[in-house]
Amino acid sequence: MLSFVNQADKRRLVIVGAGMAGSKLAHDLQQAYGHRYQILLIGEEPHVGYNRIMLSSLLANEISHADMPLVDTQKMQDDGVLIRSNDPVMSLNLEAKILHLSSGQAIAYDQLVLATGSRASVLSIKGACAPNVMGFRTWHDVDVMTQLQGCQPVCVIGGGLLGLEAAVGLVKRGHKVVVFHRAQYLLNRQLDEESASLLQTRLEQMGIEFRLGESPESFLQAADGNVSHVVCQSGESLAVSLVVMAAGISPEITLAKAAGLTTNRAILVDEQMQTSHPDVYALGECCEFEQHTFGLVAPIWTQIKVLIKALVGEEAAFVIEPTPTKLKVSGVNLFSVGRIQPLEEDNCIFFKDVGANHYRKLVVNEGLLVGAILYGNVADGSWYFQLIQNKTNVSDMLDLLVFGEAYCCAQVA
Image 1: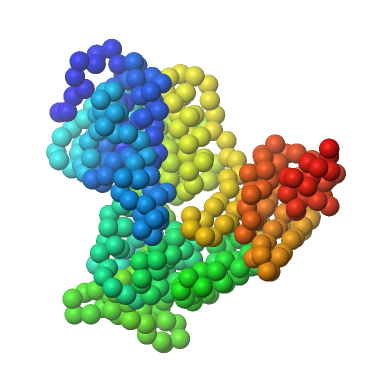
Image 2 (image 1 turned 30 degrees about the horizontal axis):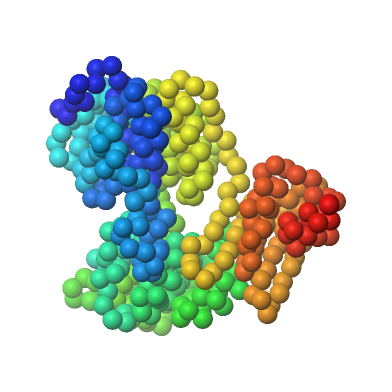
């Protein structure tokens, strides 16, 4: 059994998952309460503590490997954090407080945090089980994509944030990319049709082709088992060298379910991030709170702050708050937050400048801003977000609200 040595006065905390949530928790907890805890961070990937948000920039060749770390893992280890990479947890015994690694080692803990993240969802399309059908979630995924040589035809399934970032990165590497998206317009959860149309035009100018309102009918496999063609619903066949599935994510809860923790779509947690079992917590993409799961960084960072306080016995409570969305594509400025599909009782304020490729939509309800979409000029995004968070009454500035903070503040002055 792997033991925590010479730390009898400290609580043994094991964090399963060395992605962004797990590694930041380990870093922040060590900084604040390293005198109380002996921390072991376990990851299934060879790379630990990297910034997953930067994968699209790495794929687009805009940054190097040196720009990927989220935390300084060497310093963490120097400070006493134990890190075990490329060795996933295979089983968990909640009653004995012991988990077993793929390497065969057993580890005992006092408190446990599951930060197992998520997997790329694989749509049930005939022929999808092939070596060249992949997700876009890990550093390894980017390494596979960058091995494509020359100008290769690539199919991306999904016109959400991840799909578009993958498509742009592949186009920038010289490949020919077609994106399939089941909805009638791109980023349908973050945008309206007007802003999505502007975005689509910009991405088409980059060289991306779109098939909206449809998914592939099937994939044809060559003799080597790789997908060679995508069959469209019309019967048309498109040659491909790679298929990237970016049609959503599925929380990774295999370990939690097998151990007997209560799960729904993800691992159920309370407002202190505790699961259904004492001394076992979960955070990040693998957890579910009040029927919400989490794929954006902001709420996960809040969860980490709450969890650290909960671990040391201080009062803290996680609450759901609006979170802005931004597309991480160089040359494309987009901001979306709150309610973007208005209710019947909402009022909408629009601004559009075709020449400047600038669009704004604000959703107001009973004097409160409840949603905003900005495309092109997003400079006022953080201000609109503050208005939403602070529940500021904007009734006196409705005529100028769409023009931004400078105009509204000048009016007040």
